[in-house]
Image (cartoon, rainbow over all chains, first blue to last red; front, side):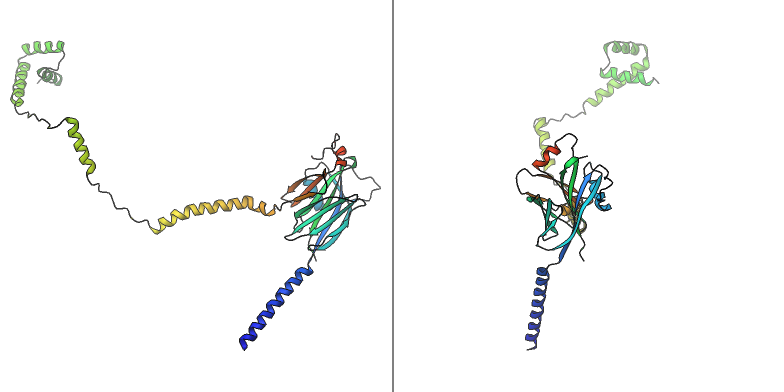
Length: 154
Length: 168
């Protein structure tokens, strides 16, 4: 009788742990990101421009990329968090939106939409403080970048 | 006593080993010098006396056959070789441990060189939504930065124009 009770208790604990873990996964921790639309140029900013340089660390990492631009300005910064497997649409500018989907194993899918048209999507493992940078040419020999950084969640 | 050269020449004269010119000189010397003449006579007598004791042996077979038999007997003699001893435990261990250690070291080096990079090489996967969107990726492994550079058909006019070179 005692053994039977013990088995019942053990099974209950096991069941509880399994369901709890499942719920924790299903409830999903939120993965935090920062997305920055960046303008790359070699020209100094006009006096009336309110853009500010990207933060020092991002600037240093961008400057290490094999590009000719020396100045990187943050056009728009967005901080957000998404549940694992969910998709978050973030507007970076009137013409640029990104769709961020955290996947298993620290991977993230970043889809780009320009002028309302899907451009493509990139999937990449992205650990905390790592950068996933997409970019292209812009007018007047400048460039645009979307810098996606995974940040430590709360 | 005659000097050593004269004695040797006398012996050679008796054995008939001197060249013709010296043979004549030695004959002349023997006729002049009684000591030399006496020595020559003594040597000739001794030679004649010993000639009868030089036993001549005849081989029963040909010379080559005789020596080939000796050679064959030498080959069949048991060779006194030391018994091979069973290898010691340490020798057996060393035999396996040395290559195993080398292999492990190679694997470790390979892992250190390529493993870390492999672990961080998370495989950038790009999927364009439509034709004409070209992309290339660049990885800065030190900073953990991945760049995906996109070029659209609309951008090409800008990118291809003169100083629009993107790279440094």
